[in-house]
Length: 78
Image (cartoon, rainbow, N blue to C red; front, side, top):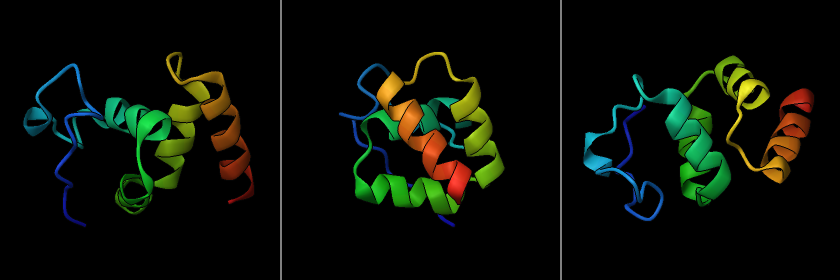
């Protein structure tokens, strides 16, 4: 799976071109879950291991509560 060209609006606090999706997996996943569009969520779902996404959702301290609840439900049934 290829890496995605991240939108500046999604990563407003850094230069998106400098993001390493492997090294910065937690940051990328949290940002996409909270603010990503359908294409970005699909890319994340295909790019990252589901166990990693679940671990990040469960342990995240910066996801919005609504986002965290939604993804915990999705990942519990997936």
